[in-house]
Structures are given as C-alpha cells and as structure tokens.
Image (cartoon, rainbow, N blue to C red; front, top):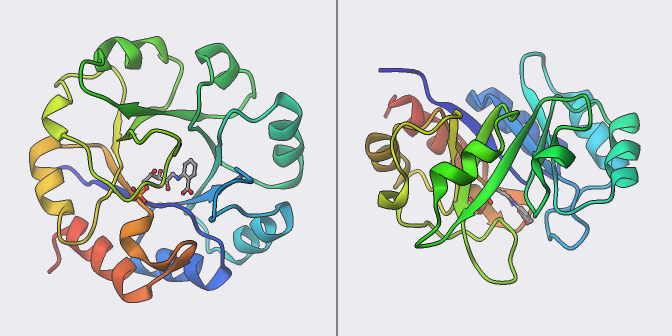
Length: 207
Ligand SMILES: O=C(O)c1ccccc1NCC(=O)[C@H](O)[C@H](O)COP(=O)(O)O
C-alpha cells in the first residue's frame, strides 16, 4: 500500500506544531487569512516554524490575498509551499517562485477533472467541502463519490476528516495525502494532542 501523507492544518501554537511533528505528520498548515479563527500573524508563524524539527513541510494558506500580502509573508516566513484556498487563477498561483497547491471546493455537478487540469502547474490539488460563505476549515465532509479517478495532479483529500473516518476515506479515494483541521481540535485553532496522534496513527494504519 502506498504511504499516505498527512497535513495538519490550522496550527496556531508551537506546542501543537510539535505534537503534529512528533506524531509523524508530514506537513503543517498556517492560515494567513485574517477572517479565520485559525489565522496566524507573521510573528506567530515564524515562532512555530523555528520550533519545528527538520523534514516537516510548512504550508502557508491564503484566501484571495493581494500579491503584496503574499510577497510580504514570503519575505518574512520560511514557507515551503503555498496553498491557495480562494478564487486565485492558475497564473496568480504560479507567480510566486514557490511550489503551490490549489484548493477546490467540491459541489455536485462540478467538472472536477477539468478544474484540476486548469491548475497543471500545481504540485497537487486539495479537494475540500463547499459551504457558502465559508472558504475552508468547515469540518464537514463532502461526497467522495464525486471524485473522478485518474486526476492529473496528486490529490490531497480534506473536509471533515477525523480519526474515525480517515481509513474509510483512504480506502475509497486513495489520495496522495489527507488534510485535517477541525477533526483534531478541542476548539478552533487549538489542537487536541490525543486526536492528532490518533489521526496520524489511523492514517498509518498502526491502530
Ligand atoms: O481553517 C480555516 O479557518 C480556513 C479558513 C479559510 C480557508 C481555509 C481554511 N482552512 C483550510 C483547512 O484547514 C483544511 O485545508 C481543510 O479546509 C479541512 O478543514 P476541516 O474540514 O476542518 O478538516
């Protein structure tokens, strides 16, 4: 069975980043979207990244941010990968000389394969739940049967995953990686160490 990578998104505290790293997560997500309850400042982001051990990918998440906002963040924070979670075009996403992934929010009737193909410069595509007025971190799953097979980019599955559902999700969707936020929290932006550990264990199929 191929290894499924794990990203723990919406990290706001050094201790939660360390829990994720020690649990075996491959990546952490830092939300640079001021309206999010999980938003981090430049200073917070730097402190979190400086505390990390090596080999953990740091992902900066943006929602329709201006070019200068992204550039200022990149100049101050050592991010490995950008995640665009809004209406950014492929050209905008690819204009920062940094690897990037694009989040798409799945709705019935959407031509997922065509939307994914449009972002061909991406390192991967993250499929997330659609909820009107909420750009991400909804805590809700979407209908995985809508995902076509043979997508042209590595698939990162997100949306309402928990330790209880992630094995079924992997079995049904066979993603390259899974992404979780709300399912490993005790409150918005505050991760629950036991849930983080359990989630990663379940992905690794250790328990
Ligand atoms: O977390 C947020 O508040 C957020 C706000 C705006 C855009 C994206 C956001 N989060 C993205 C994620 O945390 C995940 O990539 C994904 O949406 C899964 O979240 P969840 O359903 O809570 O597991």
